[in-house]
Length: 122
Image (cartoon, rainbow, N blue to C red; front, side, top):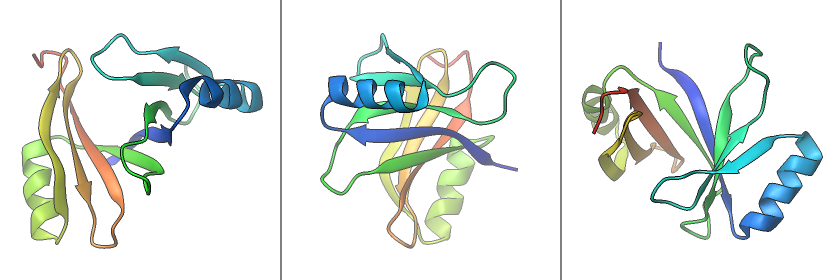
């Protein structure tokens, strides 16, 4: 069954946000070495329950937290989302060495992502 595996918190000032989440919750935050301004967030020790996430620059004024749901196939779920009344916000994109990701809006206006893991993605 698809489940939430990642969160993204929209931020305006990276230094302020990383300081806040590190001090308040003790989260470990590290700048990602990828093509986007993205800070990976570790919220737990290995083997503990929960999910990790990221801080990302706010893309729209109303953006808050985006949850990402792991699915077996982005292509399959893209069709299911459209058929269910959802809207495609960003098409399927490759994250090299990680897999495939896309963003959608549900019938209630909420934005979420879906992720297909595939370490061979290029």
